[in-house]
Length: 189
Image (cartoon, rainbow, N blue to C red; front, side, top):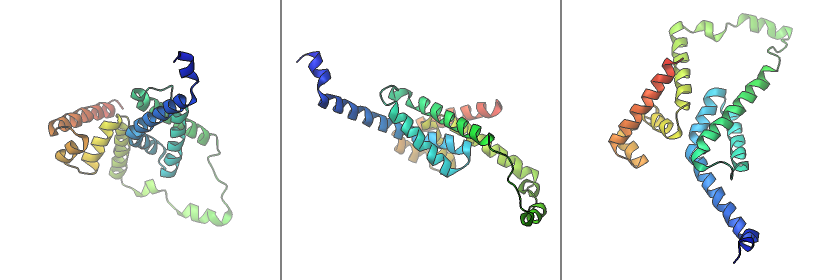
């Protein structure tokens, strides 16, 4: 069999494409939750985050042969960052005000802003929570998953060790490194 006959065999090309698609799907599934959190925290709308994840998946499919599976997570975060940037750029081009009819004017003037009703400590906690979520989404997918499972879902070290197939000591080390990264990210702001 010659090299040209291998390259021209359509069944070999289909098999190769199927293997690439399977590898891409596996790699995408591994880091999709982290990319979704990355998007959701920055846009603040679950429906918009779902739409953006579909766009990320389409971009990943179109670049299936060009992006190595080991680099996919970094590449997907870049795609997500560009989608978010484009979304906010489009939002800033729209007018900031909506014309208010006379009937609605009294209701708007009588309403106070929500922030005025909230005490300063609640606003500080909300801002700290938002900064923490931004820092968490900057971690890699595995670190995000461990932090979310341990501190938000209150899973034990033993449960996490079984889930990730490592020892409890390894989970403690991963959590320690994740906390150090979060601390550095929060102190740099």
